[in-house]
Length: 224
Length: 224
DNA sequence: CACGGACCTGTCCGATCGGGCAGGTTCCGC
DNA sequence: GCGGAACCTGCCCGATCGGACAGGTCCGTG
Image (spheres, each protein chain N blue to C red):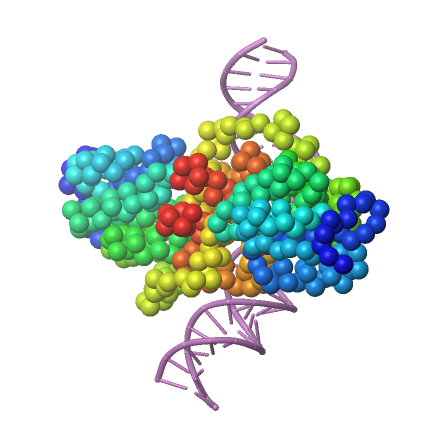
């Protein structure tokens, strides 16, 4: 059968896939799932970005299944790899497979040339459908990713890096110290409801969705 | 009638009070509440620690009503002032009046020589009773403060500065980036329940009660 | 082998959080 | 005077959090 000259025909033939994930377990799991499909074939694996770039030239897959995990260490490694692959191999479809949903990440992945974005908790059939879609040259985004993408596209346009009001800065400094809404209210002589109101505005302006995230941002901003 | 030689008699006479609070409004409010009582008299006010130490020598109050607010800036200023007053003026009773309850703060205040700890949301009569108690040489802690004190005394004895396990460090680093339990679980390939379990242990070991506080501690620890 | 420690999982519950809705005041600039 | 912004307040709701249960595995030490 040989790996020579893999089929690039859109209609038929085997879809050659490369798996990129730093966990061997995950790669093995994906491999066993995908190889149950007669039209899918895993032709290569890689656990790092550099390894992926080395292997992709020889394996010449049609699809790269890329686990975009912002692991504890680097956040952009996966996105950079995605960009490099799509730049160097325009005929390869990168399908981002990630553990969970992040609006910004969906958009960044698209900018990096990804042709699909699938959250890992989709069922097996969803993943396989996505692979076939991308292999046919289409895009593949599951419902949640698509929704996130739309939200992300709608939000950022006017998404001012809004500046915090004086009061909000006050609240942020307390919030950043781990105080609850009730405690913030007590310290500022305002009601818990009002503290919550300010916190809500801060979350919106900092573009985060939890106070813990806000504390993280505050620490990066040097507010603490 | 003169302020000369204020009565130090335990049984009778006027109780001279000094107010220490950085908010003029609060001082005014306290003054009007206290002066409705015929046996209470506000003889001095101060808005800062240094001012308080200057004024106390001339005013010679029996009671110092000290607002121990860990304002946006300094956390220990109030406690330090409390310690200085009780050291330099052992016949003065310091009654800590604070916005909300904090177990550690109650204990720290006691160590700093405070003879009472009243949370601001007690009713007026509770405050006045506390002042009269301290003036009589007794201690005055409202029910909630007393309960907090007991809890604080029971907890800390073996309170190890427990060290985090490897897994907990991993979780902390994600937690400190503002991730939810679900997200942490997803990234570590464990269930949300387990993530929650680790977070719980981290909170206990760091001696905090919310993830936002944990992020704050983590930032101080340089974990971020 | 038995024990403890680290890790993993689940369920239940009350408290808090975050968002949405509907108001109010004050102050400043047009 | 008439917006508009910043601030303040209340009520509702579903989601998440944090704590307290009650289990389980694996592994290294005694």
